Image (cartoon, rainbow, N blue to C red):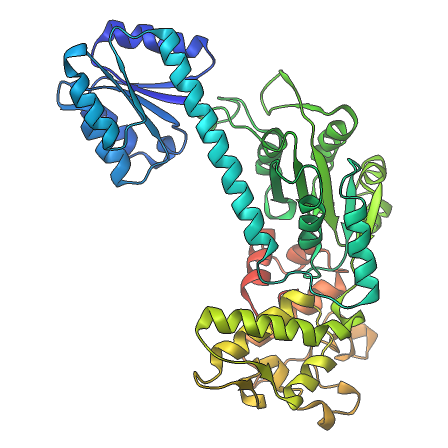
Length: 478
């Protein structure tokens, strides 16, 4: 644990600090309330403190003042008060104010160990409870895999059937189809459901940060490594790790993941201690086989990941699910926004059924959220083209459009029939800037086979910027 000691007696501070370091704890020290306050106000340091051991009486304040600071700022830190026997009554009052416990001086080290072990157990339990809460929220959040598609039901049944195995699972499918939700189903039906379930978006992190996040790092291993950091593999020991967009992982990091799969071990960045883990890996990708062919992904790692393969079909191939999803999203967003909307009218439904959804379920969800948000407070039905998102207004109503050729997203590849101009698109002058940006991003994604790394390079923007736009521009979300 990371422990902050506040003690004005130099001999006591030296002895306690050395003992805790020998027991494997990281220690920060302060001799008075003023210097302790600097640490408590340092956002970088405070995030790494688990426990404060503070003397009740300090030259310029008290341990109670430190406790009040911790409580007023809602820090997730346990405070342990040390005190002379004559001040026990005050220490007990401190516990009533939120201190974890008190210990009398001279400190009995065995008693201190017991208290610290109780704190570790409590924090582990709270972490597990929080993980379960998050998992339940995920399980019942917007975008659950609602389906009556026979193909999707077969996929889900297969996912449930393999959930109790320890085999690696590779989930493939376009963005927005529900790969993470399928991973949730596997975990929630497995014998690891009460163990850690850690999710990592591999494409959203740079190579250096990704390696540290996955495998952790030792204190001092690089400039900003102020303390030991446990990586996602170590934290998920005994449970499951979900590696989304695994195809975007650099080759160097791929080799380390392969070792985890083969040997169940790794070292932290900057460390030489081998750490053993029991982790089930569920990976997700859009076209990992294509990256193997291009030499961008290790073939041996691909085979290790692809033990059980689940391919989610896009929404355009299971349109029977669209009415079900519309009803679910309307119900959810109506409750969230305090409205009483029940359904959409026939004309709007026709438009939504005819659209091909390059952004899949995520895009449909965003469309419904928009329509519910802009609908009148007393409306019970979404009706009329005026409340459709701007890019869907071009569709007007499906009956007015022969072969639905006016949808700019369905027909991006038809914008230019001249192959010599394949790198260009025509944008009407009256198109909104936001819609034009959506169109450019969509075209670039299609031209680069949905490869986000190549798309970001082609658009001369960072990968994080591309992800942010795909998440925040609700009119595309591909």
